Image (cartoon, rainbow over all chains, first blue to last red):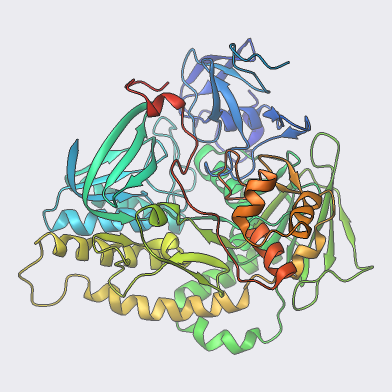
Length: 105
Length: 462
């Protein structure tokens, strides 16, 4: 992840790094960072696609009220990226994912 | 089920001050908050594992740290990463705590739930890159992440001035600030502002910082629309009149990738409503608030409110209201019986002066509904269920008289956010079209989405 996402922060100030899985690929985050912070720091602004009109959506209220930043975490759907810190080994998936038992379509 | 003497919901300045006041008297206190760390929005901290504290000298940081140290020195229990999704019989709290469901019984309840940003729909407001000013600030303060490169700040009120300074300090490019309020008559409020000289000077400091960074601060200017394919590519603003109706042929275009929006705040009152507290609409804030007396007691005898969730006042007002609520809750339980002067006496006095200052801010930056003119037929009003203005208009034309009817007919307000981001707009649109009073959707549990397992016998709800 680029260290220059906040140019005035001293190098190394974010503390230890951890490994996790983002959309099936290995990824790195700083311990304590929220999923939303990791995605935005990587320049990824679309967190999900709206269910009806398939429009891109990303972080909006940033404080757990609007539920726009929903991602899938360890196969649990609809987790707020802005409220959830990344943990080592965590599996994070962006985009819309339907429940396995869903029979629609 | 666990019985607790004082349950505080919300760990911002109001909730923490309330917890301290009650715990100092010896009451058993439990604080519930959705975040991993206490602090709320204004006193939020970076994760514990971050090595240096970037914003160490800032006033908020110092103040927040002092309050948090006070909290840690007292036997206060915390339930973090915990959502209260329902209150039953005014005392039974249903919560999800780190994916486990729990129930609590509160002898007294202090609701310090805070506020969220007033949603104002405009074309393009669902595009990634349109964020609330508070959300961007939180990202900066707690995560040290700049969520964009070039910023336009639109809205009204002091937060935009603070955020502009913080963005510049973080190395971002802020192209401009469009504040919809006007300078007209603002001199009238100068005496009230000077009353709180420290805050007044702080405000002048923010204005100076904006000037120094050569950021244009446009007054009587507001967002009209945002354009882009998969994210924000440009924003269009225009002059507005005194009621914030956009003035034709005054548009400006900004090449930015991020638009920070803050047209003031709305109090979070759904838990108060579930606890049975009577709400009233406060026109100067454009928000519903729980009715409460000078002791912060609501219409339900053991339920108190404090902070922005009790009416918009900012962090200092919140802290004093919290103290008052905490002291009075403890008194109700039989603590604080022997005293010469009332333990919250300084807070009652301080609040009087602070509220005078707030009266000035409220008047200077009051929301005006002319801005709703920017809504077009195809503008999304309910972000969750993707309901457009044309759908709402159709429902009104078909005879809808109440916001709950519009909800039932169009599905607006039935999505994940539980109506927080469409209710205010729909209430306005309905009132404007029918001449009826402003309404709220009926508040029902769960106030936040929860896994269906939360309603079963399973303890883990994943």
